[in-house]
Length: 264
Image 1 (cartoon, rainbow, N blue to C red):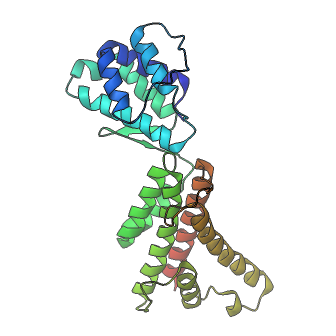
Image 2: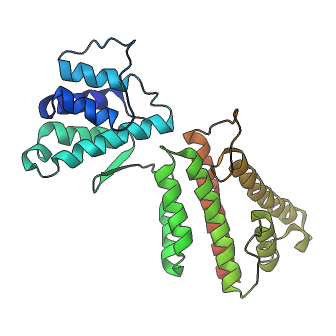
Image 3: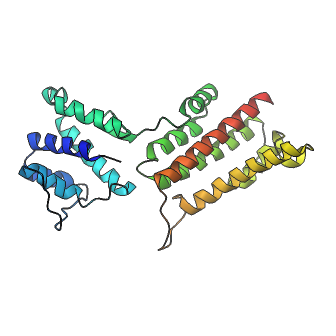
């Protein structure tokens, strides 16, 4: 999440580069309104006003966090032609603090980054085999992990589906457009000699059965937490940790599938 020190540096940037009216428009344009019950203890009208707007947000909530990131991006867009501003100490410090908080600022966009993901191997395979759909799903999952965990979970499962369909296409096998994740992986597991009933040794049957269970579990995770289905009134929202779990499991599964395909 965005930490307090990062926010305070942003308030300093606003104080030196925006009017009170501009700060109001900046936040309210992103659907953020003052917390009237909150009394900021920060000095300066501009800093206190910005703090009052941020106080209305729950920065542990991905939707609220994305609103704040949008404010950062719009603020930058208004000043991107000002070289003195971009080279100034406060702006450079703000970018460093964003990086410390786990965000990357590139081409006017702020995305969440996390070095624990198995990025290089996935991207290496998608580049080698030109698996565009898998690469797109992977990048979408990484980009949304922090700000939209529901979409990240959906994207991570789409990545597995795309990998399974790519293998079937490469093998010249037919499948139906509406086949479920379970149907696709069972077909691929048989094709790649990965199905538990294709092995007599107990340890292999156990391991391959566990892999099947992981795929089934990931499908259930998407049904429970992803955004590919409608939600009831009392639905549970996933957190960043759920998204990380789905992304890393899905990434590992895709690597295993592609490497098994290579050896066939």
